Amino acid sequence: MQLKRGMSSFKIDQMPLKFSSYINRAELPPVPDVFGHVHVSNPAGGWGMLGNDQYGDCTVAGIAHGQMIWNWTSTNKIPPFTTGEIVSQYMQLTGGVDSGLDPVEVAAWWKKSGLTDAHGQVHKIRSYTAIETPTELAEAAYLFGFAGLALWLPANAEEQFENHQPWADTSGPPEQNEGHYVPLVGRNSAGNFMVVTWGSLHAATPAWVAKYMAGGVAYSSKEYMLGTGLSPEGFNFDQLDADMAAL
Image (cartoon, rainbow, N blue to C red):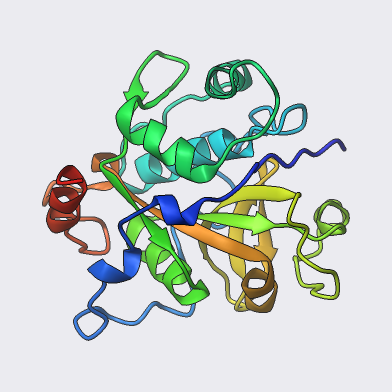
Protein backbone atom coordinates (compact mmCIF):
# COMPACT_ATOMS: atom_id res chain seq x y z
CA MET A 1 0.00 0.00 0.00
CA GLN A 2 1.30 3.44 -0.88
CA LEU A 3 0.97 5.97 1.93
CA LYS A 4 1.91 9.64 1.91
CA ARG A 5 2.66 12.10 4.66
CA GLY A 6 2.34 15.79 3.87
CA MET A 7 2.55 18.21 6.79
CA SER A 8 5.19 20.66 5.63
CA SER A 9 5.53 22.52 8.94
CA PHE A 10 3.54 23.44 12.02
CA LYS A 11 3.72 27.13 12.92
CA ILE A 12 1.87 27.01 16.23
CA ASP A 13 3.12 30.52 17.07
CA GLN A 14 0.95 31.86 14.26
CA MET A 15 -2.19 30.93 16.22
CA PRO A 16 -2.57 33.77 18.74
CA LEU A 17 -5.54 32.15 20.50
CA LYS A 18 -4.73 29.28 22.83
CA PHE A 19 -7.19 26.52 23.62
CA SER A 20 -6.20 26.66 27.29
CA SER A 21 -7.54 30.23 27.54
CA TYR A 22 -11.12 28.97 27.05
CA ILE A 23 -11.11 25.96 29.37
CA ASN A 24 -12.28 26.27 32.97
CA ARG A 25 -11.54 22.79 34.21
CA ALA A 26 -13.26 23.47 37.53
CA GLU A 27 -16.58 23.84 35.72
CA LEU A 28 -16.19 21.05 33.17
CA PRO A 29 -16.62 17.33 33.81
CA PRO A 30 -13.45 15.28 33.40
CA VAL A 31 -12.83 13.79 29.99
CA PRO A 32 -14.20 10.21 30.08
CA ASP A 33 -11.74 7.35 29.86
CA VAL A 34 -13.56 6.22 26.71
CA PHE A 35 -15.07 8.79 24.38
CA GLY A 36 -15.70 9.48 20.71
CA HIS A 37 -18.65 9.49 18.36
CA VAL A 38 -17.21 7.13 15.75
CA HIS A 39 -15.59 3.87 16.80
CA VAL A 40 -15.30 1.52 13.83
CA SER A 41 -16.11 3.11 10.50
CA ASN A 42 -17.93 6.08 9.15
CA PRO A 43 -21.59 5.13 8.59
CA ALA A 44 -21.66 6.80 5.17
CA GLY A 45 -19.60 4.02 3.65
CA GLY A 46 -16.07 4.51 4.88
CA TRP A 47 -13.63 7.34 5.47
CA GLY A 48 -11.95 7.25 2.09
CA MET A 49 -8.24 7.83 1.46
CA LEU A 50 -9.11 11.15 -0.24
CA GLY A 51 -5.88 11.17 -2.21
CA ASN A 52 -3.42 10.64 0.65
CA ASP A 53 -2.05 7.54 -1.06
CA GLN A 54 -0.99 9.63 -4.05
CA TYR A 55 -0.43 13.11 -2.64
CA GLY A 56 0.76 14.67 0.59
CA ASP A 57 -2.71 16.14 1.16
CA CYS A 58 -3.19 14.83 4.72
CA THR A 59 -4.04 18.31 6.03
CA VAL A 60 -6.99 18.80 3.67
CA ALA A 61 -8.10 15.15 3.78
CA GLY A 62 -7.92 15.33 7.57
CA ILE A 63 -10.25 18.30 7.92
CA ALA A 64 -12.67 16.61 5.50
CA HIS A 65 -12.75 13.60 7.82
CA GLY A 66 -13.36 15.94 10.75
CA GLN A 67 -16.22 17.58 8.87
CA MET A 68 -17.76 14.15 8.33
CA ILE A 69 -17.63 13.49 12.08
CA TRP A 70 -19.32 16.78 12.93
CA ASN A 71 -22.23 16.21 10.59
CA TRP A 72 -22.71 12.60 11.65
CA THR A 73 -22.68 13.51 15.35
CA SER A 74 -25.14 16.38 14.97
CA THR A 75 -27.44 14.15 12.87
CA ASN A 76 -26.91 16.24 9.74
CA LYS A 77 -26.31 14.70 6.34
CA ILE A 78 -22.68 13.72 5.97
CA PRO A 79 -21.12 15.82 3.19
CA PRO A 80 -19.73 13.85 0.26
CA PHE A 81 -16.02 14.34 -0.31
CA THR A 82 -14.30 12.79 -3.30
CA THR A 83 -10.63 12.31 -3.97
CA GLY A 84 -10.81 14.66 -6.93
CA GLU A 85 -12.43 17.45 -4.92
CA ILE A 86 -9.98 17.20 -2.02
CA VAL A 87 -6.89 16.95 -4.23
CA SER A 88 -8.08 19.91 -6.30
CA GLN A 89 -8.42 22.13 -3.22
CA TYR A 90 -5.09 20.91 -1.90
CA MET A 91 -3.39 21.83 -5.17
CA GLN A 92 -5.03 25.25 -5.15
CA LEU A 93 -3.52 25.92 -1.74
CA THR A 94 -0.05 24.70 -2.72
CA GLY A 95 0.02 26.49 -6.06
CA GLY A 96 -0.13 23.22 -7.97
CA VAL A 97 2.89 21.59 -6.33
CA ASP A 98 2.66 18.50 -4.14
CA SER A 99 4.59 20.18 -1.35
CA GLY A 100 2.42 19.50 1.70
CA LEU A 101 0.82 22.19 3.87
CA ASP A 102 0.94 23.65 7.35
CA PRO A 103 -2.22 22.83 9.39
CA VAL A 104 -2.28 26.44 10.64
CA GLU A 105 -2.45 27.72 7.08
CA VAL A 106 -5.20 25.23 6.30
CA ALA A 107 -7.18 26.26 9.40
CA ALA A 108 -7.06 29.92 8.33
CA TRP A 109 -8.25 28.94 4.85
CA TRP A 110 -11.00 26.73 6.27
CA LYS A 111 -12.31 29.66 8.30
CA LYS A 112 -12.04 32.27 5.54
CA SER A 113 -12.85 30.38 2.33
CA GLY A 114 -14.24 27.04 3.43
CA LEU A 115 -13.94 23.42 2.37
CA THR A 116 -16.10 22.54 -0.64
CA ASP A 117 -17.74 19.14 -0.93
CA ALA A 118 -18.63 17.22 -4.10
CA HIS A 119 -22.07 18.92 -4.25
CA GLY A 120 -20.53 22.39 -4.21
CA GLN A 121 -21.53 23.16 -0.62
CA VAL A 122 -18.97 25.18 1.31
CA HIS A 123 -18.21 24.24 4.92
CA LYS A 124 -16.52 26.80 7.18
CA ILE A 125 -15.31 26.76 10.75
CA ARG A 126 -16.12 29.49 13.26
CA SER A 127 -12.74 29.63 14.98
CA TYR A 128 -9.57 27.73 15.75
CA THR A 129 -7.11 27.70 18.65
CA ALA A 130 -3.69 26.24 19.43
CA ILE A 131 -3.39 22.99 21.39
CA GLU A 132 -0.12 22.67 23.26
CA THR A 133 -0.31 19.47 25.35
CA PRO A 134 -1.72 15.92 25.11
CA THR A 135 -4.16 16.79 27.92
CA GLU A 136 -5.55 19.69 25.89
CA LEU A 137 -5.69 17.41 22.85
CA ALA A 138 -7.99 14.98 24.67
CA GLU A 139 -10.12 17.82 26.04
CA ALA A 140 -10.54 19.42 22.62
CA ALA A 141 -11.38 16.14 20.92
CA TYR A 142 -14.00 15.39 23.58
CA LEU A 143 -15.58 18.86 23.60
CA PHE A 144 -15.37 19.65 19.87
CA GLY A 145 -15.89 16.20 18.33
CA PHE A 146 -12.33 15.93 17.04
CA ALA A 147 -9.02 17.75 17.26
CA GLY A 148 -6.31 18.22 14.68
CA LEU A 149 -3.08 16.46 15.66
CA ALA A 150 0.22 17.53 14.09
CA LEU A 151 2.86 14.80 14.17
CA TRP A 152 6.55 14.36 13.43
CA LEU A 153 6.29 10.69 12.50
CA PRO A 154 8.99 8.12 13.21
CA ALA A 155 10.33 6.07 10.32
CA ASN A 156 8.26 2.96 11.16
CA ALA A 157 4.82 4.61 11.35
CA GLU A 158 3.65 3.24 7.99
CA GLU A 159 4.87 -0.26 8.84
CA GLN A 160 2.91 -0.31 12.09
CA PHE A 161 -0.18 1.00 10.30
CA GLU A 162 -0.01 -1.60 7.54
CA ASN A 163 0.42 -4.36 10.12
CA HIS A 164 -2.67 -3.08 11.97
CA GLN A 165 -0.55 -2.42 15.05
CA PRO A 166 -1.27 0.58 17.27
CA TRP A 167 1.29 3.33 17.09
CA ALA A 168 3.16 2.34 20.25
CA ASP A 169 6.87 2.02 19.42
CA THR A 170 8.61 5.11 20.79
CA SER A 171 12.16 3.88 20.16
CA GLY A 172 12.74 6.03 17.09
CA PRO A 173 13.23 9.80 17.06
CA PRO A 174 10.61 12.23 15.74
CA GLU A 175 11.42 12.98 12.10
CA GLN A 176 11.29 16.78 11.86
CA ASN A 177 11.02 16.64 8.05
CA GLU A 178 8.34 13.92 8.06
CA GLY A 179 5.22 15.70 9.21
CA HIS A 180 1.76 14.19 9.13
CA TYR A 181 -1.64 15.55 10.15
CA VAL A 182 -4.50 13.44 11.51
CA PRO A 183 -7.84 14.13 13.21
CA LEU A 184 -7.94 12.65 16.70
CA VAL A 185 -11.49 11.43 17.27
CA GLY A 186 -11.61 9.66 20.63
CA ARG A 187 -10.10 7.21 23.10
CA ASN A 188 -10.87 3.50 23.24
CA SER A 189 -11.28 1.01 26.08
CA ALA A 190 -7.59 0.11 25.92
CA GLY A 191 -6.73 3.70 26.77
CA ASN A 192 -5.39 4.46 23.31
CA PHE A 193 -6.22 7.52 21.27
CA MET A 194 -8.08 6.92 18.00
CA VAL A 195 -7.14 8.87 14.88
CA VAL A 196 -8.25 8.79 11.27
CA THR A 197 -5.34 8.35 8.92
CA TRP A 198 -4.89 6.93 5.43
CA GLY A 199 -8.60 6.14 5.18
CA SER A 200 -8.89 4.14 8.42
CA LEU A 201 -9.31 4.44 12.15
CA HIS A 202 -6.02 3.74 13.89
CA ALA A 203 -4.94 3.55 17.53
CA ALA A 204 -2.02 5.37 19.14
CA THR A 205 -0.83 5.02 22.72
CA PRO A 206 -0.70 8.14 24.91
CA ALA A 207 3.08 7.74 25.24
CA TRP A 208 3.48 7.62 21.47
CA VAL A 209 1.33 10.72 20.99
CA ALA A 210 3.25 12.57 23.69
CA LYS A 211 6.58 11.85 21.98
CA TYR A 212 5.65 12.57 18.36
CA MET A 213 3.08 15.34 18.83
CA ALA A 214 4.19 18.68 17.37
CA GLY A 215 1.01 20.36 18.64
CA GLY A 216 -2.61 20.52 17.66
CA VAL A 217 -5.54 22.62 16.53
CA ALA A 218 -8.99 22.88 18.13
CA TYR A 219 -11.82 23.90 15.80
CA SER A 220 -15.40 25.02 16.32
CA SER A 221 -18.15 24.74 13.74
CA LYS A 222 -21.85 25.58 13.53
CA GLU A 223 -22.28 22.16 11.93
CA TYR A 224 -21.37 20.59 15.27
CA MET A 225 -24.02 22.62 17.06
CA LEU A 226 -27.37 21.24 18.17
CA GLY A 227 -30.60 23.21 18.18
CA THR A 228 -29.70 24.61 21.60
CA GLY A 229 -26.69 26.44 20.18
CA LEU A 230 -24.37 24.19 22.17
CA SER A 231 -22.19 21.28 21.18
CA PRO A 232 -23.36 17.74 22.00
CA GLU A 233 -21.12 18.01 25.07
CA GLY A 234 -22.66 21.32 26.16
CA PHE A 235 -19.81 23.66 25.19
CA ASN A 236 -20.70 27.28 24.30
CA PHE A 237 -18.44 28.91 21.71
CA ASP A 238 -19.77 32.49 21.84
CA GLN A 239 -16.83 34.02 23.71
CA LEU A 240 -14.32 32.16 21.57
CA ASP A 241 -16.00 33.44 18.42
CA ALA A 242 -16.03 37.00 19.75
CA ASP A 243 -12.31 36.87 20.49
CA MET A 244 -11.57 35.42 17.07
CA ALA A 245 -13.53 38.21 15.39
CA ALA A 246 -11.56 40.82 17.34
CA LEU A 247 -8.21 39.74 15.88
